[in-house]
Length: 121
Image (tube, rainbow, N blue to C red; front, side, top):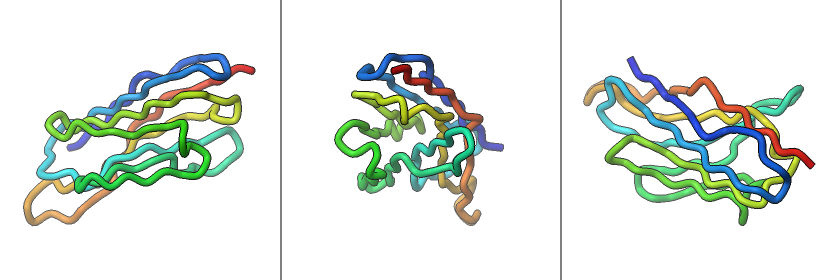
């Protein structure tokens, strides 16, 4: 059983900053990638940023230059530092982890429950 728990969401004014955290716990053999997605009301879930175990990071265009993803591999934790927030960043932010629960197990994608980020104008 694997659980992802996000924290750090909230209400912030435009131009402000928030730092999201996500901890993966449970039966984890190896984590391949962790990342952040978001879903605004009436829209599909979309990529925000991902961080691969090898160090590569990937950002959606909307967050480039404003968002920074980082990982603490020893703690199976991923962070998302969000600066210069805009009202259009308002969404539920979900953490994901692609991992193996055993040496011979397949990789599987797990999701957190989401944390609300609201940016007021």
